[in-house]
Length: 498
Image (cartoon, rainbow, N blue to C red):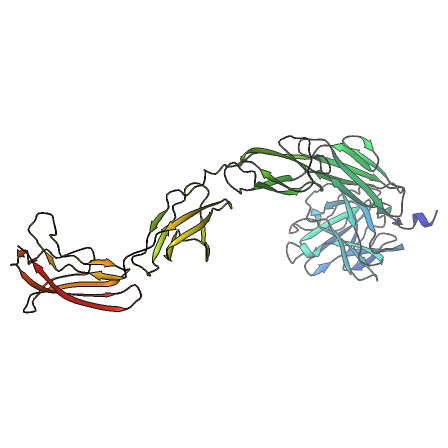
């Protein structure tokens, strides 16, 4: 039985009885430093004792520690948690310059050291006795407990702290170490759980849950809320823990991946779940079939709902998940621009897709997945094309590029009649090639420039500065870059007939 009582440590003379005097400690206690007093009746302190006839009192400043100590009959041990209660009062009678009371408890190896600060009361202002309870866990073994003014928080340098202490508990009680694990309830449900356990010298431990009055280490079937766990140790110590239980943070998110053409079942929904307790189960449109993988595929366009259930029965429902139906996909009005002349290989196909989901990609033999809707530099022949939209819907077809019969050249008429009858009124160059850098110039027999243009579709109307010229022969010159990138120049004469 003695081994079981090893960590409760008795306090001698807890009532701090002694002979009132300055610079003195109560019986069984020792002076650590400076000038603690046994009260009442010394230097203006008249407060009656809260227990017995006398008590200890201290002043303190940033440079002045007053404290008493007791060598314990057993060392406080590293890692053990202890509880000690006492009465404290702000001893205003010492000096009107004092600000408040403040107590510190230390662990020491020798009488005069304060190696580890174990507990601080913080400032207190009560001028009548008030009960305080200290709980602390030493980081080393200490044979001495030291109590005194908390000079770390002195309000000034001249005895800013004044306090008295009385009616200590007669035992440093070891506290059990209490741990607990929460299983939060589902939203709006009462299926939460708290499992408590305790370790320490004074087992077995018992547990009470307030305000429910339930006993035992497990509290089952509870909603979110605040619960108080009281752990009872065999040495008479009770430890109270306030436990806040929150609802499960359980949220599912869906990513819709549209795919395929209108009317096809190639769409997919991917699910991402946070919180709750895995593994998860997934149900589509309230159907009884349950999936364990977080995806549904081969879906038609439409509106879906998905229920996600975790391992504890928590449920999150995703409503109104819309998979849109794309418009019908076609390309029935493609445009073909044939070769400008035989052998030029400058034909074009202009694709004009409609519907589906842009952007589109296009492919022809030798051309794979281009994004330009115009296929250029084509020769004559039958082409099989494929157009694919953003949902991988593909349409195909055939387009015929006709054979060009004209040789690659330009032609100029040798005469025209600008008489306004609408027939052969304009001298215009006929082009059978994909040319560039075009220029047409017309001169009279003396070399005067009568007309010039860079527009291959324009022509000369047989005038000079809007004045009709007489019938006769005129010189023309054409320069251009041929479809095969050759620099060309042609000249000749044209006759105006009036």
